[in-house]
Length: 301
Ligand SMILES: [Fe+2]
Ligand SMILES: [Fe+2]
Image (cartoon, rainbow, N blue to C red):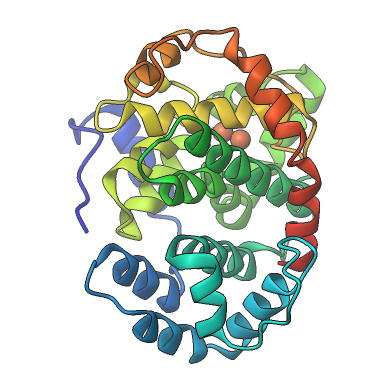
């Protein structure tokens, strides 16, 4: 899997700030081994169902969660599915990869040791909502890798968790500022730290060796016109973040609904030549039919 340095100038102010902040993080949260293995296996066309089910079955909690989910009303299959191999045949590689990723991320970062005003449960609802919205947009626009859209949507704001976990005092100050000054979390982050959750999240994605386009989508989800590797993926995550905010799903740290960057429509034209800002209503109506799924998926995970 390739990774690259999005920030081409290591001496820039942002790079220095990231280094300063991340140097304080003593032990980096690691991407659960099973997730890295699954990401690698599912990108290899030679992988068989057997390989994948063997890896998942080695993790008992993961196996139990996947089986609970495939047997839930979320999928609504009429017959009981009792093995991972069966779940894989019915749902396919991509769906199992998405579930594994979401389960593992929530298992690692779901609960906070810190007391404070940042509600993790609502945060993960925002993130899961964004993952499902990204998947819906990818499907609607026939974007080639909808699984990648789910992953990028799920962890687009992971930088906020890093700040909450490792720089808790500054993060509490940021949340306090959001509320007292009625500003966006990005503005508060810039005031307090000089950088934002997007840059911290991209740094983590790089450490985790996630594909460069996912790293880019995290870094530029608020500035989608800056994306160069895969502007379509970044545009999808940018739109999804706005959709979940419009539909009040969970809480991303502030109550602002940012406006859509008009340049995302240009990025998406290769997928849908007539796309423009009027599509937002169409996307909202499709997404509204899936909102119930966000809560039921969240409850199971
Ligand atoms: Fe964000
Ligand atoms: Fe967000």
